[in-house]
Image 1: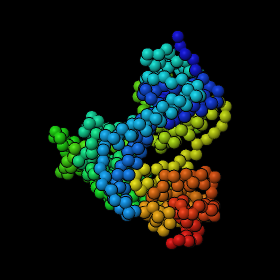
Image 2: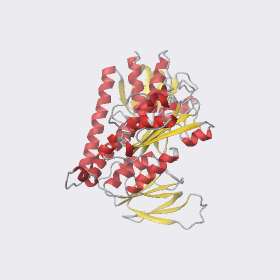
Image 3: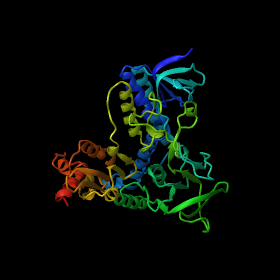
Image 4: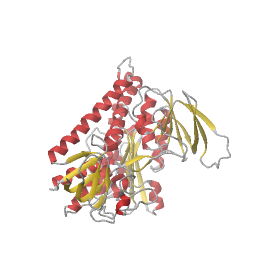
Length: 466
């Protein structure tokens, strides 16, 4: 017998499970299908959450080794990687159980299995009765991109998933790709004593980041011992048993250069992600993908069929969990006859290294490209009393504002607490605040957020504490 639903969500990641819960709250009969036994998608199971757990553990170890003595604390610290991994797994388990509880609380039916769209309203899940859906929401997320000629075995050559499962510290880890994922996971293992080399095709790390912030970020990571080979590409990896030999040449080379050989015991391929749109049965209903594998949707997240929608990493835009969540909520609100919107100009992004890096809005380079007359205000954490008291004074806050209207166009932060601080900037920009609005808002003292206030002051006058 078939089961009928107002909405079937394919994918239980941040976008999918949030959309399913919201739809149920709006009175729909909802099922959410996912190939994993536990909801949460890549983000919760093998992405955002486990990586942040390891970043926290490795940072505590690094702090104990290098900074506690500055506080008058002396300790003989050692690392137990297996126990660290167990803690990471416990964090994931607790959170996935939490989603299961929320599904039950809100009346969402969770179905474990691979979903395939058979017709405009029918979904097949192996081992289950057919699902008949008035509406379908595709939220299957993304998967790690691969590189030509490099086979990921998740043992020696790994994706981000494999890099979260090492049972001991590698001697030498080579990370291919200097984006958010590669730098975060490279940081985890560098703090635990692994030699880390990052090979990046571009001539700078995190190419989409504000250039001034990226340079400071690069300098900070180098000071922690991470080695960068920029403007390079890996053309071959030779397995030599216990060692891997990477053949690296200049990115501009057409193959005529003699390769540089980098030997290591582990390689992390972190060359980006691609939409997870294969095997969904889209061809059964004539939904085509663009050349990059994305599903085309309109402003209401509808495909060519008004009742088949798509959100998150399967549609164009930044591949971020919180972007998918916002889209999921707006999409089901639309189905319920309500209105909502996602302001794509105000989606924050965070790199959870130490120091953290966070941004929202446009970079200074983009301001120039777009022809904005703009002004910049900066404030260093070295002059922030809270940062001084914690001992983490690396970095600064940078505010970019329109020169005529003073409206905030972008905020970029490198430093401790950057990921939390960026929320204030996002709220300010959502309500079209000026830099003076931020500057004249009373901030608690002493806090890191005072650095944002001072940077805002610096856009139209002078900061007080520099």
